[in-house]
Image (cartoon, rainbow, N blue to C red; front, side, top):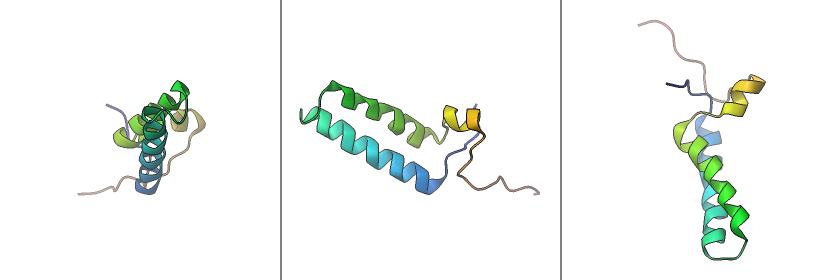
Length: 67
């Protein structure tokens, strides 16, 4: 459906940040706004970031052409 525009290193960082934010929220160390961690989790898992599309950013390698 969407083209991948988030590279592997970027995805790892996003999921790690999301995990920290969500864990801190679930442990009630930070308030409910920590659920914002769902956004980097979704973009990290899917490999697609809508803001990257808007700004023309792509952190993954170019698709390989040819057969």
